[in-house]
Image 1 (spheres, rainbow, N blue to C red):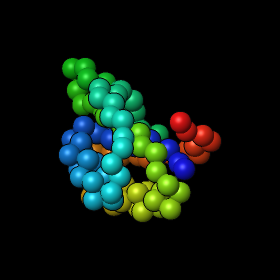
Image 2: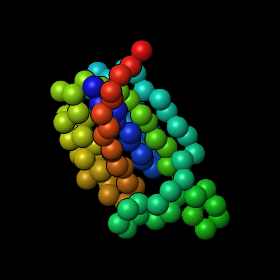
Image 3: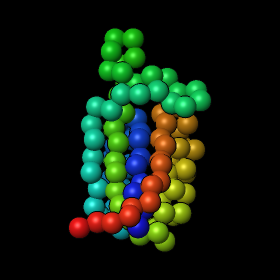
Image 4: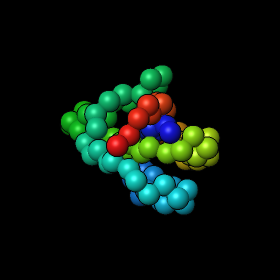
Length: 97
């Protein structure tokens, strides 16, 4: 199993939830009001007067065979509007209860 952590501009919230539904990924944890800045050229998302936009994040645990399709779908969403921004990170899950 893998954990996929997806960070995205709040403008993409409905698209991300729709993406998970379409891929049959039911379980996730949603984080609102996530602050940060993109690795290479992203603007800060701070919720301030200077940087008013904010990010959100979703963490989900999926089977290994679902990861590639999920990452491909995230990449397609990113290509639709690169200025809005979305990134995904994958970790191994050792055990669950």
